Amino acid sequence: MSARLDAQLAFLLEADRLKQITRASYLADRSRHENSAEHSWHLTLFALVLADQAPEGVQIDRVIRMLILHDIVEIDAGDAPIHGAVDTEAMAAREQAAADRLFGLLPGDQTVEFRALWEEFEAAESPDAIFAKSLDRFQPPVLNLHSEGGSWPDYDVTEEQVRSRVGPKIARGAPGLWDWLSPKLTAWFGKE
Amino acid sequence: MSARLDAQLAFLLEADRLKQITRASYLADRSRHENSAEHSWHLTLFALVLADQAPEGVQIDRVIRMLILHDIVEIDAGDAPIHGAVDTEAMAAREQAAADRLFGLLPGDQTVEFRALWEEFEAAESPDAIFAKSLDRFQPPVLNLHSEGGSWPDYDVTEEQVRSRVGPKIARGAPGLWDWLSPKLTAWFGKE
Image 1: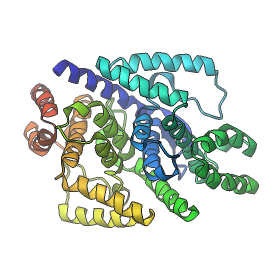
Image 2: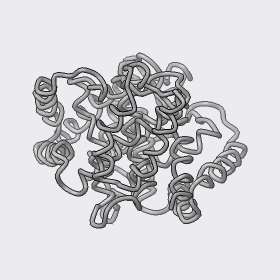
Image 3: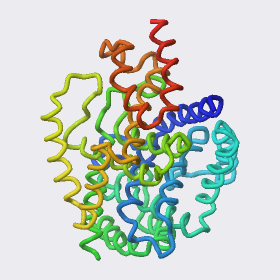
């Protein structure tokens, strides 16, 4: 039992480093960039509060578990800004290696269980993962709209780019959230 | 439906401010203080990983929901360091007022639901809340042991004070975690 706990604590301490992975997004008051640990917390709160936006059959507690874990690989692989230029294949390889090392710190049964949850999130094919992904795409534009465009001006992003990069993924998992967001994008970019 | 979403998003944006509430604890590498949003995320990960330390009957997904919400009131009330001098009654009053305002931003049914979860956590009487509290007491000494004592030297805390302030609460909800931590405290303070 003690060896099991030692392994679990080694993982939990390594996970602490997610607090130092900086994202492209800003906090809502634009005082600084958001980190991936607090972003993960914010997303679990989005899932809890916006559960009634999930299609029937989605299990919110599984969505929350996925969101707790979804960015852990960034500890080794870094964050890939959605509007940045990223080599998708190289990034995927880095994330797989990160998942090997990080989930590998856990006891064997949990290595398998957590890795499977993360892979399910990444694949975005199950109803739970599709909803989780839609929240992960929905939260950054919400923050951006409240922080003078947040990361959009930094990357010279146009309304069309935002719509094409996040719209389909939000609308797929949470159509009500896209309906809410879409006119706000029009209004914000219209004022630019 | 749109008014409901507007209220939910107003709450989620206000919750963003938890990322700016600084705690006494440091990150594991002592590079800076931890904030309450990333601490909340870390605790949900502790709950997920250490679920097998929970007594029978504890529902981990309810524990996780409590931990997502447990520090929200700090947005208005601030963080009360466990080893700092705090007027407990005044702090409790500030936290009640904060809960009124913050959970009050949500649609009525969620105001009631989330407030009840937070009150359950605070009361620490149900098995789920007792386990959640034990994790909330367990994580800071774990970080401190890996960051040159973390907040202990800042507050001139002795081993006896740590034991009496966190020991009973950890042991009550998660005896296995206290058995794991206790000799590590002896070793760390012995080296001082």
